[in-house]
Figure (cartoon, helix red, strand yellow):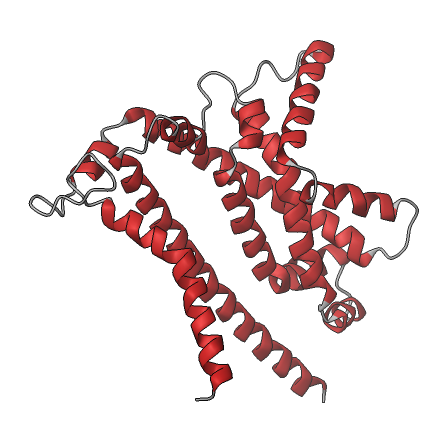
Amino acid sequence: MNNRSWFRNGMLGLGLAFLYVPILSMMVFSFNNSRLVTVWDSVNSPTLRWYVRLFENEQLLGAAWISVQIAAMTATGAVILGTLAGLVLTRFGPFRGRAFLSAMTTAPLVVPEVIMGIAMLLLFVSLEQLIGWPEGRGILTITIAHITFAMAYVTVVVQSRLAGFDDALEEAALDLGARPATVFFRITLPLIMPALVSGWLLAFTLSWDDVVSSQFVAGPGSSTLPMEIFSRVRRGVSPDINALATIMVLIVATGVVLSTLYMKREERRRQREEQMARRDGN
């Protein structure tokens, strides 16, 4: 192994250690019996004490359930709107207002979250004064705010997938008499499904992780889990937060692994179908 390989592998190892050693240390200390999160109790550790206390904390569990609801609705809404925007920007060619639509769709990617939060708050207050909707701030306003910035990420993912899409399959189906709606649901949608799954998971994660925008548009009784954790951490990290973070890391890791396996399987299936279609055409 030459010096360049040693350097590359060393830098890769340092980068991975920088990213994951703090997470691993947090997971280890979630089994610590001491109330001090940085002092390991070698006599009574490891223990599941803080996991038991976590599941007895109704406030944290309620915030977690609110976050799950908001993230699921955000991801679903962002995928629907992002897919429509991606299709329009990719398939409809040049049209009046295309540049404006593209700029407005991707603007949330570069606008600071503080500005987005203030803008959404002013929008909801103005709408409530004009038409009486929405009544106050809560889960609905948080979901709308999250969809606003999450759909931009989904649009980029869908556009990148459609950019390498083989139009010959759709054209062949149209030539055989299939209607455009049938072509979309039977051919286009299954082929871009890996991108939709990736976009859904990305939007779910972004919504689950958001604190800044949620702080502006949340109301009484609608505190999300990140907001609750942030308010607790400012008073000092408690061991049950380590337990909660460990569970969240395991859930995210499981979701990433399952989605990766799913996308690999769908990609292999798509390649087999394309090969079979080419053989039938020849």
